[in-house]
Image (cartoon, one colour):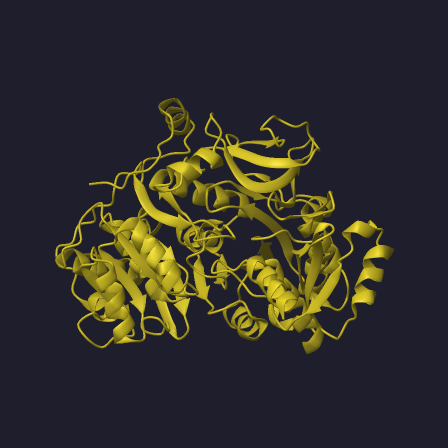
Length: 536
C-alpha cells in the first residue's frame, strides 16, 4: 500500500535521474549513514544524542510501532515541538514506511481535525504539554472523531500510551522498510495565509535532493553547529538545509524552544553555534536586543545567519553583518518545493537587495502576467516554476490543483517577483496581498518594508479596510519601541518619496501582531479587528 500523489511525467523523471538529482535512496539515509558515529548529532536542553544514539532510538520506536500494528503505506498525524522526540519519531516513521503530517505545535483543534480528516491517520503522536492534549477528555474526543486512529503515542505521558516508554523498548530484530524512493515520504503543510493549509506530498527522491543541494550551496559540514530556533517541523528549518542538512553533513543541531534573543543568545554562546535561521520579525528583535544589551558578544561564534519566510527589507539586511557580526544569506523558498539562495560569495548588493537564485540548474522559473503569458526580464509578475523537487499537486485537491498549475505542470505560488538579467529574484509581494484604493494598486509589502526603516518600528503590517467611496483604504498596524503618531508615519513615508495614495489612511499601534499557525502575520485577523471597530 502506498499514498497516492501526482507524479512527475516520465520524461522529466528520467531526466532528473539521469542528471543525478534523484538517487533512489530513502530519506532514512540522512541518519543511517552515520549509524556508527559517536559524534554529537543533537542537543536538547541537558540531553545530548550522538548519531549512534539517535539512530538506535528511532530503530527502537519503529519496532515498537510495528508491534502495535502500524503498516507500510499508512499515515500518521504528528504534533511535537522543538524536542529530540520530533526527530526520533520522524525517522522511526520513515523507517517503517508510515507517512506523517508534521503539524506545528501552535496548531489547535481546527487544524488538527482538518489534517486528520484529509489523511485518515492510523497513528497520533502528540505531547501532553500541548493545551489540547493535556486533557483526557479532549484527547478521547479527538480519537473518537477520527475512527482511523488505532495507535496513540504521547510525550510526557506516564501510562500505556507513553512515547518515551515506546522509545525505550528493545528493537529486537528490527529491519527498516521505508517506502520506495519515488513514493510519498511525508506531508508538508502549505504556508498559505487563508484557510486550512493544504497538504503537500514530498517523496524521498525530491526532498533528499533538496537537502543535498542545499548543503552544497551553504557549505554545511561536520563542523556545522546549527541552532534550530524556528519550529522544527517547518520546511525551512527542516531542509534549507536545516536540521536534516546538518544530520546529512554529520554536524550538530541544538534545539531552542523559540527564536527569542533571551533564549537563543546564551545557547549560541554556550554551544559555539555557527549557523542559524530566522524570519525577519525575529531578526528585528535580535537587533533590538543587541542595542538594549549593549553589544553582540554572545554571538561571537556565529558565522552565517539565514533569513527567509518573508521578504527581508534591504535596510534590515544591511544591519545584520554590521550589528550581529556575521554573514547574511537570504533564503526564498516554499514548502511546495522551489528554494532560492543568495550565494556565500555574492556581493553585498546582491545579498542585501535580492532573494537569490534557484538552487538547481533544472529549476524552471519564469514570470507570468495576469493572463499567464511570459513577461520580459525585470518586469513584475506571478512566479511560475517546476523542477526536480517542486511538487506536482496538493494531496487530494483536484479543484485547487486546476487553479495552482498551468497545462505544462508549472506551479503558481502566488508570489509576485521580478527576475533580473543574471537570474536573481526579488520578491515584490503576494498576488493577493494588494490593496485597491480607488483603482490605485498598493503592494502591502512595499509599504511594510518602508515602514520598517523607521527607527521606532519593530513590526509592520498593511491591510485593507472597506471604504464606501474608494472601495478600499489602507491601515498600518505597527509594533513600535516608543509611541508614534499617525502624522509622523505618514510624514516619514512622504519624505521617502512614497506616492500620496500609498500613505496609510489609518495607523494603529499594537503590542504584537497576530500570527497564523505557520508563523505568518494573520492579516485576516487584523482586517476583522478593523471591521469590529467600525461597527462599535
